[in-house]
Length: 428
Image (cartoon, rainbow, N blue to C red; front, side, top):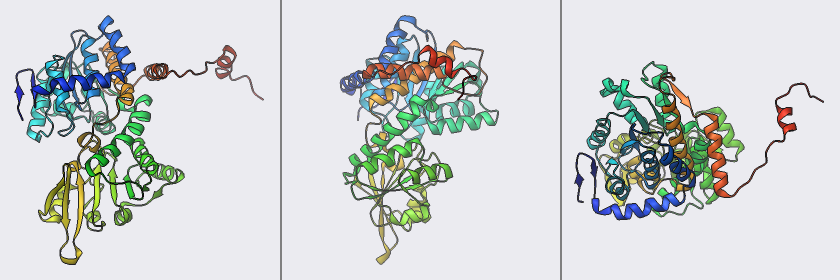
């Protein structure tokens, strides 16, 4: 692997830029909402002179978001938000073709991962875009003197928003951040349809297993879990859902899924997928009772949902790679031996073993990012240091634009209907 290094980038292989350019263009053709925003940004330059630090998955879709920010006048620096999610050809094209400072190498170790975050922060950002809150956490924990330079930020993921709300509750958040993840045009579509499809894409690419007839366990029934469970059932799997939230568990039951605690599901499952945003969801006591050949994958943001350290301890070092992106752990001894397979080291399976979400669904998510960035910058000095929801008018505008690009028309209220909905005097 060759390496291109300069003060502007740290990427794996500069020769991949041509392939990256082609793939970015393919994604762009499927992101018409973001393209329309880019066209306006080029004209109005709402981000002119703003230093933007983006800690995101370096994929084709993200590349088109970064291109949009640059078109709006921003000075953009980007790094990976996960050590295994970078597409090296995309990173090369961003650095060489787009002139965007890019620090991302697929498979980078933890030290390199945080060095890349620091290189992005060296650009003295005025706006942050985060996917998991590592950038914001690093800024507040290691470089607090820079916090005052920030106008605002955005956060893409459920996990990141949880961390940010904890910072807000602890009076530790130093600038306003918009929870892009919580926009309806993000979590209702990206989390459900994007995660649902791309997770199974990653599992199938890594293992080539047949899902039909498999007993699959989905840990977590938020919007991501709903999407994964639905797609598994659609491909013929028998799905068990594990939950801690009684309302979500009830919803899963009403949707026709079996609901069990992990202690019971661990004995039955052939495929396990975690999407909870929490740690140790599958732990030592679960590994010990699993069926021989059970396959484990995680589609939550961090690699802590499957307790890999406990699995390593139980296996006593008996581990080997059986396919690219799949490791086999041997547990027990003698007649009690059984094997547990882990995909992508327990990291984000859809981005580590596949290409992440389809561009057409990321079109809405990244439209939210671009417009939320514009919104927070336009309110410089007006916002408190807390987590904000995406304004409703931005959500509605993105939905309208998406429908337009799909050729879908909807009804409009008549004057009489508007009057009725705003009145309390008309009854039976």
